[in-house]
Structure formats: structure tokens, C-alpha cells
Image (cartoon, rainbow, N blue to C red; front, side, top):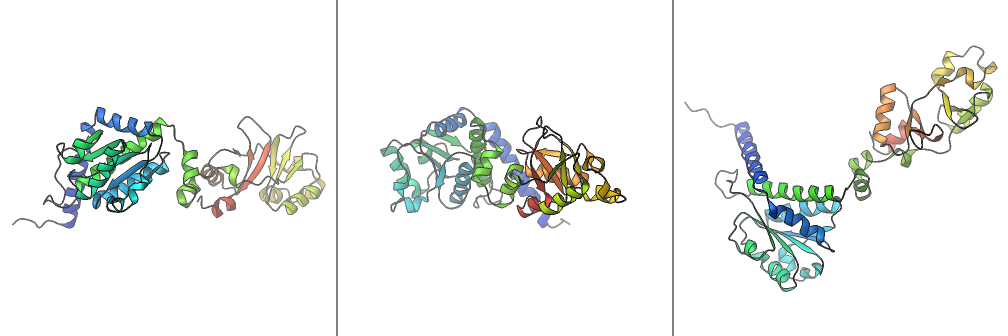
Length: 320
């Protein structure tokens, strides 16, 4: 007796079928892809991404990915474009038009507008003889691959390929522009991603608790209490950080503590972090040593502290 197809069977078939289609897409790319990227790079304006239905949802995501990775872009709904939003497409822009069939009627006005005003148009479709592909300046043809629904009617494989193609364009542009994590943080300051990309400099305190090795512990304790960090750093005559006094150091030297100097109590060679390091790295370093704060240096070669970072600062910023 034939075993019934389970939900897991269906899921694995769909995912493998779409993965195979992505392999076909990767192998099919050629000079046209390079031309599409170069066309976007040459544009002095924005990249206008448009599509109808499921292609429209993919177009929105592609526009958002482009915009967040250094390529100014936005989505224009083709039906709204026919009722005034064509004005959102201007001289210097480039249009990226998505349509699996290449015959989506709602795209007609956008296509005509780009041809009339000589706005470069990149077309993405599976039919190389379609109206969209015949009209565009750069044609990106999706390889023939069956939709994963099994009936050829539900956009599944085709939308996955289009989405991946958009990601490929965005990353190619991003790498060409040497777009860095710092650039991404500027455009994405909110949420977990923004927090993960926060630098130590943005969270550190510059009002540091510091004493010299000759400072009597009575005065060092006063600095710890006044500054409120629970520690005090010990610096030499050149301002170089040579040690740190923590709660653990105080407990280990409780006998005769007030008769000693900071230099006698301190732990030498404390762990530090540079100001331009990611706060996430600072948290990992604190976790590694089971400590709750780090002194911060401007550069790895500069032994002078320029700030102090507490684990609570990172928690408040959402880094962990």
C-alpha cells in the first residue's frame, strides 16, 4: 500500500525544488547581470522597484534591501503609478520592473513612461519574448523552473528566484561601494541589528574612576564610592593604565586595607577594550572573564584609558 504524503514530505519537496531552481538561476547569470548592476551604479537618482501582486511584495523587499545597503531606492505600486505616482519616477532614476510572465497589464504605464522619458529600465521575467523584456534596456531572464505548488499556478519558485536575484544585485552593489557594518548601523539604528552594531564609544563613560599607585586606599575607596562604577583604575605618571581595583581585590586585602596604597591592592594588567570595538565584543570579553566592566582605550597601542564601560550599559542598549 502506498504511504500517504506527509506534511514533512511536502515541505522537503518544496524546499528542495526551490533550492534546485536557485542553482539554475546562479548558473544562468551572465553579462546581463553585470549590466544591471552597472546601470544602477550609473544612475544619479534612485532605483525604483515595481511589480504587481506577488511580484509587488518581492519588489517591496528588494527596494528595502537596496535602501538599507547604500542604494537609494523605493517601491512604486504600478496601479498607483497610473493614477499620479508616475511623478515619483524622475530624471536620473532607474527602474527595476518585476513580472514573472512579463505581460502584467498594470505595468504598461510604467513601461511606457520610462520609454517616453528615457529612464533606464531593467526587466525581470521568465519569458524572453514578453512585452517587458522586449521593451527594457537590460533583461534578466529567470530560468524555466516549475512552481513548487505542483500545478504551475501559485507563485512560489518564481518569487523565490526573483527575491534571490534582488539580493544578489543588492550585495553586488554593496560590495562595490565597500558598504560596511558602520554604514549599515547609520541606516539601521533601531532594533537588535542596530544594537549589535553599536560601538563601545557610544556607550562608554568618560567620567572615569582613576587614582595613582601611591594613592592611599582610604582615598581610593572614596573615588570608588563617588564615581559609582564599583572599581577604580590605577594609572602611572604618564596616564597609562597599570592596574584595577575591584570588589574582589578589596575582599582579598581586607586586613589592614586602609593602611595600604592602591598599588599594593591592585590587579596588574587589567583587560581593556578599544573605543571603536563593537559593544557585542566587549560583552563577550566580560563574559569570558566573569567581570562587569572594562576600561576603554582609544587604540590598541595607547595604554591610556579614555572611558569605562559597564555590562549594564550594554544591557540597556539591547546589545545582549
